[in-house]
Length: 495
Image 1 (tube, rainbow, N blue to C red):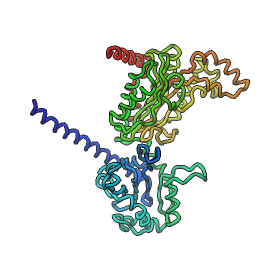
Image 2: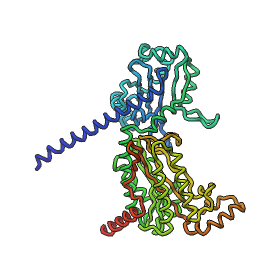
Image 3: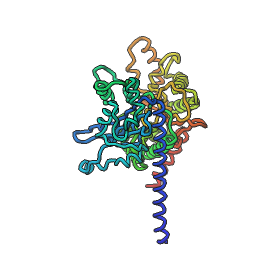
Image 4: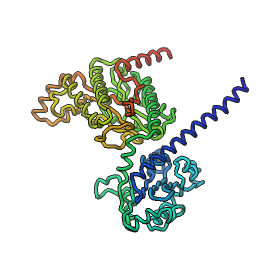
């Protein structure tokens, strides 16, 4: 037995290493394909520059946990700061240049090792890797048409010719500036500097090309997103097990986020929202200190970031394990809204179409319950206060227009919600019309007051149809109550 055991351990290690190596190769190949598509969109006379995100200070000499710029990660798979990618589609062979920070043993004693050029190349699939300290000299040489290192004048002849003919383009991720007084972002500042010093090119915005590609997930992204939602689903169910009368909201949050890290997720996709009782009517409830009561509904909006792919899940369930009649009524309406919206989320439809379907169904339901008096206007917005869908991906609210026709590879949420709160009525201007409205809906409001219900799932539109990636988490009234009943029985057995 001992001999067999000793043989099995190295074998298992070899299998694990092989799987990790295959996954790394699959990601590298996927990244190469992403860059190739970007370069096709740019054209041969362009040069793209994308920067890593800067670190953010949390307090004095302590930074927040680092999070890479989404566009740079999409193109390189590198989560390290002080990284820059340059793409030159017209180059002879070396069309991709990656800049990473130089190794510094003293700094690495504090912060850990940086990627070597060889590691950065293997991780990203970019063969030409220079140091970040060489970037400015590189740019000056290229825009000055002299070449730099491996990017010789012969290698970059096409771009140099475009510069001479004043038709070259330097493409940068130019986030919109809101006012003339706003400080320039690093890409805008870079654009200003190079235009002051060099000629022969226009500065263009790279975001339309990047966003149009990011909205349709690659094969590798689809796999990572599925895994992300598997972990998030497991975490949501851990939260359901932790919720009970007398427990605090933060205990549920802790149970959820322990699963995220325990299953290898980078972090949460967004700060977890755990709101009980009246807190369930606050969309992005930031707290977590309320002690839950048996009569409460608990709204939990939480998901993880796995390999920089983020989903989004919300579940609402009774702390006691059983919905009251008013809670069940509101919940059943929201469930119906989500089901009908999911049926409308087909190839060729848009997220705006999906939202309109939720509005149509929710209006009819609110009128039936006496919470609105008219379906022709916007009374429904008093209780339904947000959009029904958003794209998911590298960002949990990912890029893409809501009016794009849906196609396979697009991933998004469907998340209707109803929030019955006194502040919604208090905020209405005191007019005769509003006073009459309040008087008419007051009986229904009294019945459903402080009930907040949101049901949110993450979906991937596949070639065969719509796939609910968070289907493992109990959703229907029967599923939720059965799950919570088993939770209660397990708790009793544990005692």
